Image 1 (cartoon, helix red, strand yellow):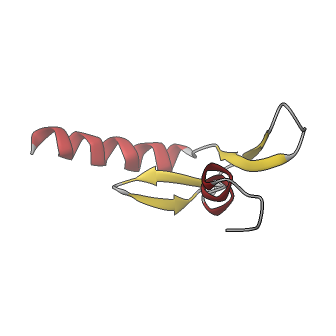
Image 2 (tube, rainbow, N blue to C red):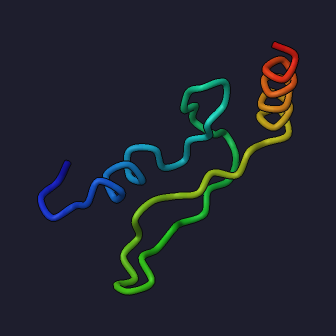
Length: 68
C-alpha cells in the first residue's frame, strides 16, 4: 500500500477493471469508466463494464450456486 493511501483506495487501485465472478476477481475485457474522489478529483480506480459473455458467465455461476 502506498504512503497516504487508505485501505479502500488500495483495494480500488488493485482491483480496477476487474469483475467479481465465481468467487474471484477476473479482468474485464469490456469498457472501463474512471472513478474519481469527488472531494479531490483524483482518479482512484476504474469501474469495469462486463461484456455479454462475462454477464452470461456470472449468471451461470449464480444459477449453479442457487441449486447447491
